[in-house]
Image (tube, rainbow, N blue to C red; front, side):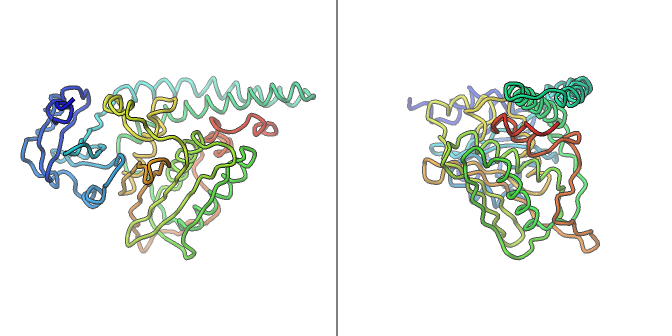
Length: 352
């Protein structure tokens, strides 16, 4: 057991490119990271850039950030271990490209099926029929969400700068919470929100931000029981905005810790799925000059903090507080789409 705390021993079991840091310097590098020209003794500050402040503030949990290695930005995560920090580098994943291509081919037949179901479901009446129709509708929305995530994950991970516009985050987030609260009302889960009263302006891609919000809320609801509360906070400090979502769900157990090194640790470790939602969220944070932190501040609740850098341009157009966002949902309701895994099937009754 004593050897398990040795950085060199631990890295032998890590399949992804990884390295350990002690006292601000790289102490060990595994074989998978050899291509990144990382050397023992190198100051980690050389790799962190704008993410250094977030790293220095890390006290617990998993922090998802951007490293600059050999002049190339790389997505990575870091966790405090016993005596060192473990950094995992996210490699360019060819599997995401394959998934994206497959999703493009799946979109057309799915769209045809959903259009046909829209016409078909208007021809029947009766409670028994309605229940079955609800289940079919929800299933189609779940499939569409998976396909949408498959299609876009590779693009998000490619770190291509999305088109930005000036957004009033105060109004934008309030609008999101109001809509989400109405959709999830039947779950018996309360959504408690607090945020700034004054407008908070910054450049952002509204579609990506909204999608990240929904992904984080959907994951929080998965681990929240009826009569419990999901807390959402929007906190502005200096030139940074924090979107914080906290739920009273179960945290990782010690038994899951090792498996976390073989896949992305954090938000989706204990739930079903292949982590595409997490890829979209962390890539959105990166594209907006921020990071993603997953921690358990009191040992029971799970808290996720997505940071956004508040950058501005004097000639940028201010976006209306009413949600007018790009249509990645194919004309369907984005809330019903993104929350399809956690809503009750009757939420899909009157969509045809």
